[in-house]
Image (cartoon, rainbow, N blue to C red):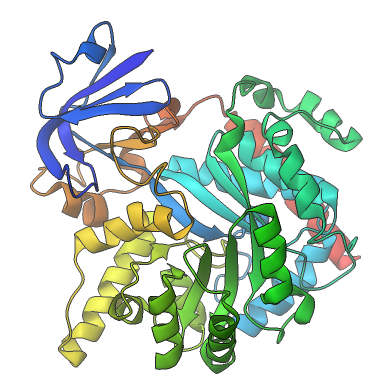
Length: 465
């Protein structure tokens, strides 16, 4: 079945196609088949469903390269957290050990639905509370049940008891991922949950490849010990499974030394994404740039929590020849949407440029970081991140004549500086409409609210003993 989005401004983020002040995007099933100024005569448009996007912007979905989704029911529990240590002690040491598989499912699902509502069509879930196989499977179901393009990046917990199944369990998880993505429960408690969550049954045709697997690790052994620190052993696990790696907590001199060690061991490269990358040495940045290692920035996390230097490393990344992706990080203290990340990064970088007399990034730069560069950072740029024929139809329709966006003078500027989640009227992932007329489809908000609240209350009751 084909759909023709016609009449609106089109921002492709494809340098070969550019932007169209008025253009059409043709979607056939899960795939973008054509982009042009007028596709009414295109053979694929015959019999297509017509969606009039006049007064709107059609753009690629945003890509969140790093979010700890399981924490979502604990949103803003520490809104004024002062540093990384306070976050670690309150959330990773205090709350995380009290999570059951069901709580993992609830938090991950809430985070994914929130992402979709804000136009994020791809989300890497850095799931660092994988206490058991059941916890991991529940997190995968939380992604798959929403229809988002999800990456389950699995890591063992920092603190508390766990089954010691990670990283060996990644092999089993990889082999069963298609079934998990189809929401076929193998665990009694999740089978019971499925019967009490009717909206799960509405996703029987979710393509299994919408949810993929990645290995998650830390940069050093400082916080959680050597078992969780990236190095030859974990790199070998990822290589044997043919999956990529995301490394969190890449901060300062210890991480700089680790990066130089990885360079000597041949462990850097495009299949590796380093998260934060604040306070790194010049030599570390040279190694990152020379090897094509990817970077995920977390603009609000670095600045608001004050991680290492507190300054997102966008200038350092660009100087090394790396165009970074952007990420949300932790909703326990931060905003949930990608527009906030773009605006904070743009403002901070341009503020620095005033005093350094250095080059200034643009609204198009940060939109690229939030779309195609983010997709590239997590190895999905052949699939998503731009409105390129042949790629998956992960796209947004954004209202450009609302009170906060009218009149439409510059489409990229409007997406970055004017629009927000209320203006995202339509969201597609792999050609499936998941948000329409400004509302998520097939999501019972009252039921979601009850489930999220009950999970939060149960976790906090366990924490308090």
